[in-house]
Amino acid sequence: MSNYGDAYTPSRPYSLGYQLDISAVMRQAFIWLALGLALGFGVAYAVGETAKNQIAAGQSPASVIIFNPVVVIIGFVAYLAIGFGFYPIVRRVNLAVGLLMYFVFAAVFGFMISSIFVVYSLGTIAWTFLATAGMFGVMAVIGYTTRINLARIGAIAIMALIGIILASIVNFFLQSPVLYWIVTYATIVIFSVLTARDVQWIKTQGAALASSGDESVVGKVALLGAFRLFLDFVNLFLALLRIFGRGRS
Image (cartoon, rainbow, N blue to C red; front, top):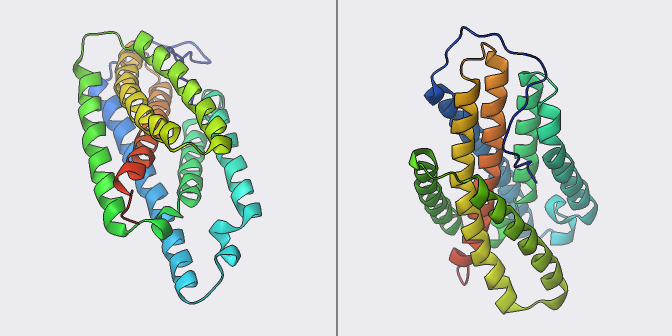
């Protein structure tokens, strides 16, 4: 969904004479990532718990908003529209507008996954989140510290991701349990690799722009990095939830 291009090209020339610590770019990206995750999962919890209480009170699941087909389609379209448009739009607008898009995207994501709080227990979701955070953290450290250029590996992972998406569409009709679990485990591997690759992307892009003298451009790199890491984290989480939630719903 996100644009995994290797370079960020500013819309106007830079002025030299300003040096920004690369750790500040990385720190800002992870702060925005944390805020996005907090918003997304906060919305998911609030909406999911409301739906669960409505169902427990005897309301038909079909009448609950998160199971309403029209609402789901509108949410899905909004999710895709913001997701695919995020990278090109953020490059052209000011940082504040980009941040607004990012948080709207996180909120829409939260609504889209809110049904997990109906299907799975809170304990299972919490443990999955912690496992995701641990795996994500390890891959982030690898991406930040490795001397290996992960750009080519990331490109291979993107091609594999396209294959996974196509396989998921096919399995929607086949309903094959074997293919389902192949896709699940492959998703974990792919987004683990992309996590390391995206952290390295933030580091290299931030270093390249650190002396530009344009804090807004550097801020956009941090925001684009946060968006990419957000997608990595939530896709890891959802794949792990399929595994940890098996038989525990």
